[in-house]
Each structure stands twice: as structure tokens, then as C-alpha cells.
Length: 175
Image (cartoon, rainbow, N blue to C red; front, side, top):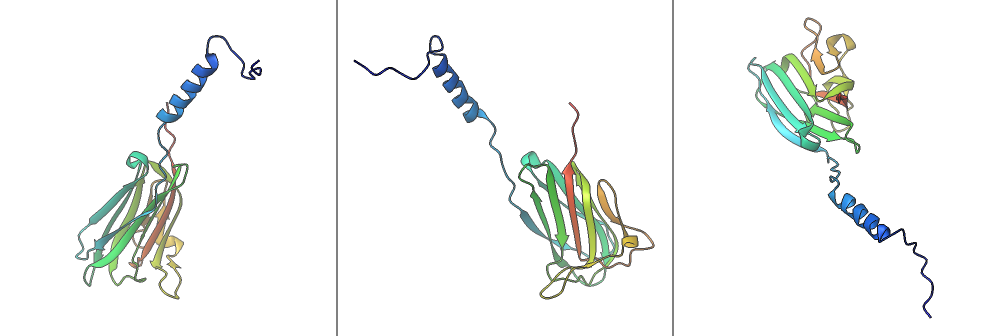
């Protein structure tokens, strides 16, 4: 005589149907992509002309970071833009800096804008950390932070820039 089955029969294979539906739902759900930080090198070019550099990050390039500037003196400098998102894709970071520390260019203007998010933290530095030296922040009166940008304050900005850091949170979309 066969041992009694512990599986409940919920009427005509309902348990089997439920298991099949669950497997289909799991298989068809969108894959959750976690953005690895991405760093891209670019040239900051002097000459007094306004230049821009931008990158996207997040699922479907949800977030954009745009660095717009004008500078004078010297020659091109290698800078980097690093972007990343939080695991839940609700925050992203944008860091722009000169890896060698201090820039020798004279910046007449700068602005970093974010799209797809609102800034929760923004900071600008006259000197980026290099070897044993630390970041040196700009004075608060030299730059301003709004919901979507970090930019120089005309007349107060002393033309020294080596690093910018932004942490932003996804904007809520209305249904």
C-alpha cells in the first residue's frame, strides 16, 4: 500500500498551475541591473571658449551629468568624470576631477547640471586630493548649489577649480 501523499489537492491541479505561474513570473521579471561606477577621461581645454562634457548612467541612461566650463591659460588637462548609482537606482553620484590634484587652468566659469534627479549634496574644490594632500573646498560664497546644478558665483569665484562632487536623488514621476 502506498504512503499517503502530503500534497493537498486544490482541485484539478491548481498547485501545479500556481507553481508554473510563479516560475513564469520569476523568469519574465526585468533583470535588476546595478550600475558599476564608470569613469571616463576627457580633456579640459583652455582658450576662453565654453565647452561641455556629459555622460549618462543608470538603467536606460536615466541620469545625466553635464559639465560646462570655460578656462584660460596653459594647455589641455586630463580630467575624469565618474558616475555611479545606488543599488536601488534611486541615487546617483557624479564626480569630476583632475587626477593630478590641482588644476593650473584659470576657470572663468563652471556649471555641473544633473538631469533625472535633484541634488542632495554638491561641493566644489579648488584642489583635489593627490598623494598625501587633501581636497581643498571652495569657500561657500564662490559657488552655489540648486536642485539641479552646482555652479560658480560670478564676481565671487576665484577661478580655481579641481574637483566637483554631486549626489542626487531620482525625481518622482507622476503617474
